[in-house]
Length: 238
Image (cartoon, rainbow, N blue to C red; front, side):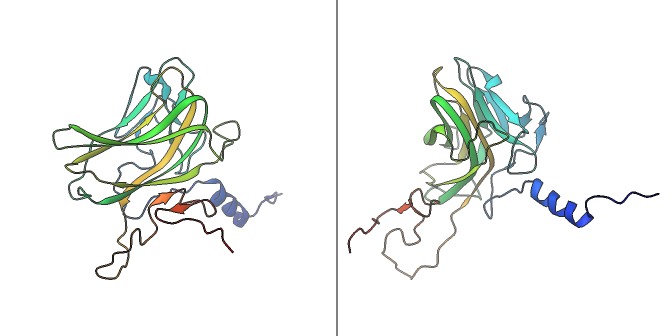
């Protein structure tokens, strides 16, 4: 006698679509391996995504996690419980044909973190054609992220982005995930779906002179209640 399944195929399909994470990259992303899904030994904490190198004073702080992710199975993390620091560093990305000095680019990523002491950061760095350092953009976090709930597995990622102007003479860029710069830093930071793209060109009047016309510059712009575009203030009058 055949036993009828307790769940229909249609219901199983719906459950699968909920359980499988969906990658989310910027349109026209040019950052390689954005979901950290290519590499070696990625199902192990000491795995290495393609295009990244574990470094810092204690490279074992640099890990790959399968406990939680936005893209299907892997995310990049630093887990620091030592008196040293770790730093994931990407390979140099050649900007030729992708972005020029003076262009505005957008970096987008998902993050979750819990930092009990010190700070951690994602740093975007620019270099000239001879790999001479030009400048950094430090995206610093501390405390607990909005979706943190005790463990990596039980927490939710927060979508984050930063608008960056490519500096003069820049020919290459890198990204770095760093567990602070001293032994005082203790905690965890996880990122996934790091993508970078040119800022879309808005449809503006020819000869426009109004500053920040597309409201893409400012602070907390992904927060619908607290975001403030550069050059604007919240009106509190009657």
